[in-house]
Image (cartoon, rainbow, N blue to C red):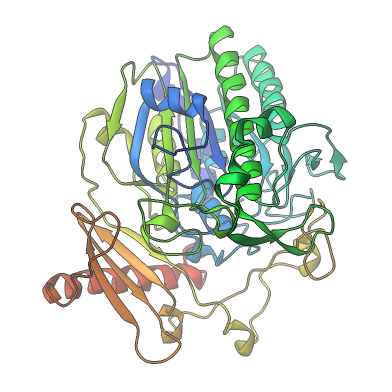
Length: 497
């Protein structure tokens, strides 16, 4: 067993004897961008439950995914670390079995831990060392990637089973059963719910599609590319038709969250349950309409990483609060460790414990937020060694989208040498206070740095780099120092005792 994990397990639990530990439910939507909620002013999409959470709980107006794509963000959510530290560079890249997750941390404090829905940081089958069960969860109903209606899901790493119905409702029903058992056992719980919605291809229920019947006529001309539900390959369809189905998925997910909230209320769990929701990256191009932020999924502009962020916990936040504090998916593990009195993992973390800042109403993050899209395409030329047996990285749960002739997903991760200068390439950014420096490598010529004042220019329209060279220089050095730390982690140094 990992020495750090042994330390966690031996940590005395009596510290919280006087105050009951909070129950924890952490939810995340798939490709759900910041602007796609009613409370953020979307002109079409209906999210009455999320709107109510925003009106009565804690609303993050500046919440970020750690990366503008899904697998990397999910790795950060679980570990409190930037995904490049563990080689989770892009969708379909796994994390590593030496990582310590929120489930390990919560288990130390006596929690029952369950995962429900999309995993996408490794294969979910039981023999995989980076499955939910391999990474600290006690039970799971999970999928290697995304899913639509009637999903095929793996229970506790077993063979896939088809579950008839709307996928968000299925996950919530399963979660409620998990909560009920934990309540009967007198155990606090951690439930991680990662919805398959609203990732394409889109499939809506009739009652939800009917809410958006006017959209095909509103957007008749623009065409977008996405997966065909019929063939699993690429197709091109009118944006209005696509938006109708996408928003139907968001509304169904919202309704399922409402079912969970009602259960918490009637079961007496609501007051001391921390209920959290966020997206994993910005809106995908196939479902993008417009946004006050520049960019979308895959971009390191705000539109790629700015996502909805909501928390309800009546015992700690009895009145509605809107915070301008910049927070990230990497902050979840340190915050949970703080709430449960559990030591932090003995390795570099990129997240911070948010709770004292939130309770004290502190609006400014004490440390920068850094983002980095590692340039992984050149790895093949270096002939790296696979981190795990490739058989262990083969997925089993089918989905509609077919890639390379198969309807399942496989994963990859590699052992990396330390401190290769080329490893600092790729798009990257740092937000420190009001300023954001964004560096994007170009196919020809040197990397281009852009500087934005996010306080006065949240849409990133005006590049201030030439006007404030001293700010660019200072942020560039901070970003490079952080990259040095990440590259050291990527080499495996954090796992050496």
